[in-house]
Image 1 (cartoon, rainbow over the protein chains, first blue to last red):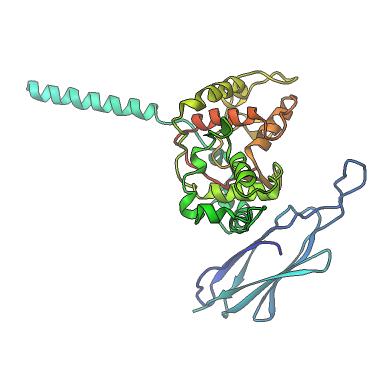
Image 2: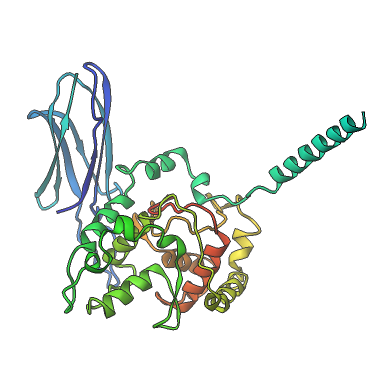
Length: 106
Length: 258
């Protein structure tokens, strides 16, 4: 299990624009890096990042080999309702890592 | 009248003294100050600083039992947040059992070998960096305080000599860049004063955490000298000198650098 750090504001006012920051540890091996013998390190990247709020998708990003290791993804959203934020990162092997955080809207 | 004149002179002297003081204030700067505001923000925010991922790994390793002794770091040192506070700020320190100074990584591996009876971590391995970062983080914000140990002196002197020793095909010493030309540019990069305040640190160029030894090796290759192998005594001696040079500056571990 990779380590992930999530930063969601502790409280948000209804209608306020909030920033959500995520960081996950991942090598993001491009597949273009040669080994000593001329073959290449096999590609191993996160392909997809999705964030849902109470099951509804609020943000999605596709990632490509040019993105650095340990991708840091920050995005903004309008805090309309509180609930459970679920973050998922899906890698080349199709395995998804999930993390969740609470969003409190007053 | 004379009292007044004396007071005036006194005030003037005080003013001059304070302006002289202002001129002699510390001109040392951490590489942090030369970074872009974006990179600074990355270091300042613990949920954005990628070095914190390793700190979390280190925290987990701290209480993981290892070796034939079946002990974890925590079994002897208990809670790192109290027992390891300020430790990184005073390393490298003299080890009586080895009869030479050890850097923090060397200390961790020595403990691992003798106390845990486990195979030491490979230099620059994820685990060794993670534990160093975790221990280093406990000193964050504290001033660097090299130990006042006379046994360290000959080693520090050797480090100082190495610092100003010209090396490699380009025939540069550390001092040629970091003492003579800090703030200037080497290609697009600002030459820092070279104070090791935040190691192990996350370098964006490396896309990972790295030790001061890795940084030294980068510089050695840069001047086209053959780098010493990882764990070489020269690195510890150089670190000893550089930590005494950075005495009083704040520990930033885990720092972020471009």
